[in-house]
Amino acid sequence: MLPQLTQLLILQDKDQAIKRLQGDLKRLPMEEERARQKLLSDTQAVQTAKQKLQDNEVAMKNVQLLIATRKETINRLKVQQFETRKNDEYTALGNEVIRYGNEITGLEDQEIELMEKAEELKSAVTATQQGLAASQKLVDAELAQISERLTNVKSQLAEFQTKRDTLASGVEDELLETYSRIWKHRGDAVVVALEGGICRGCNMKVAPAVLLGARNQKELTTCSNCGRLVFLE
Ligand SMILES: [Zn+2]
Image (cartoon, rainbow, N blue to C red; front, side):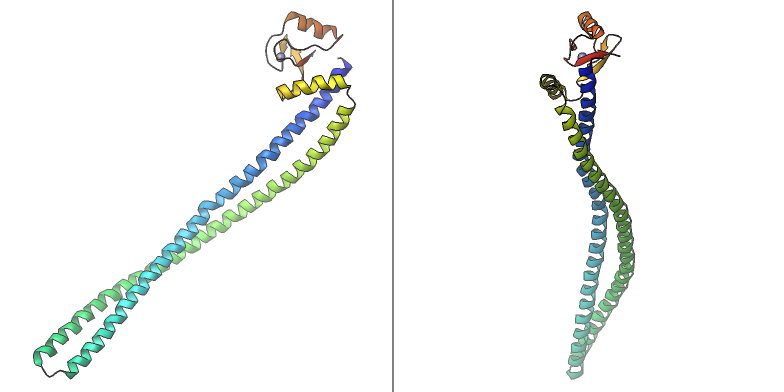
């Protein structure tokens, strides 16, 4: 193989590695974001469960308030009953006392139901909190792993970039220019093999002259389709 091509193949190898690492550098923050998103639904489940418990407590306080006001009313009615001298008023007040008493019984039943429901809702809060804690543990581990990979990618990238620059400085200017132009245009490979007359860069059959040029190995030969530098395997 032409020595220039060997030189470029080594440079290309580094450029391809750098490109992969740059891709990782872009992808890893997205992976991080996805991991964080996983916690979102579990966090919302905890909030929803807490809200239901809170709503239930408010309902319980309301019932307790209604019971208290009715008890006060009954006390007031009993005082009025004690003070009255009229028989019919005494009876009417007595009926009122009974009516409020019945209401209290109904409200106390409601209070018991709400208290039982509160126990269920407290268990639900605990369950969702445990679920969130488990997810948090998994996500934390995932985030730590991603962060470690990110650190590795960055240091590798710096290392490869230095090596790449050293390699590039050893390539003759005009050749490096040709290489850079093709790399910029194609973005994946500059020097590719010809296999059975087919360019491995574009996977198309090359013109006979290209095949001949590659076989002679006298000068750089480019693929007639994609313009990449070709060599015979
Ligand atoms: Zn080609």
